[in-house]
Image 1: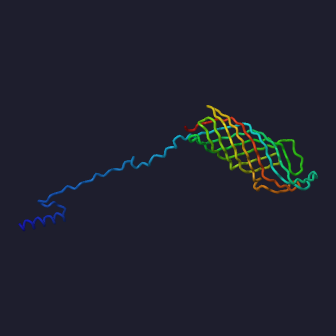
Image 2: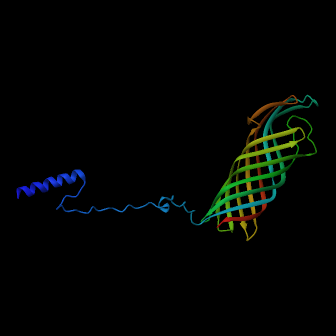
Length: 252
């Protein structure tokens, strides 16, 4: 009995060292776990986020008539060295009306009636010539133009009646007549109301522009023209624009 037990013990030790199965030993099958393969679908990146439900993307092209007035306070003193005119203005003001054509485009989104987006606008301005240094004013008109770049927020029920407020941090006013050129930069605010029909619409906007720089100089800005010392102050324009609108739906 002891001999048989010793023989079995030696056989088991031998089997563990050699990997062979000892006689009389029980073989317990090893459980093999099935490896799962990662498919290309499992490795695929998650789908892109869905667009906000109910958000519509739209564009509007518009053009129409623009009219308003430009005002600017200034002071001037000295003798014009070309015609001998003595100039002494302690509280002068330029007050000129203008009219012209304007065109622009809006790109925005409508989310449950709330609208927002960006806008660009160009406008011509037919304005009487004026001087501050005592020189004679020309009978010709200034070839003036206005450029605005900004954004808007508002409310519009579908493509029906809409209201909006606009702000343009980039405004540029250029007034040119031969060698007499004035370039100003500033900003503007506006309010608009309009109604879009199925394929076209009408809009009425009122805007106010303030220009605080002439060329690279902040206003008030002092300089000498034809021997006359002039100090220009801020330029302000107020106008209204009646335009025809072409609405475009980019995404429902």
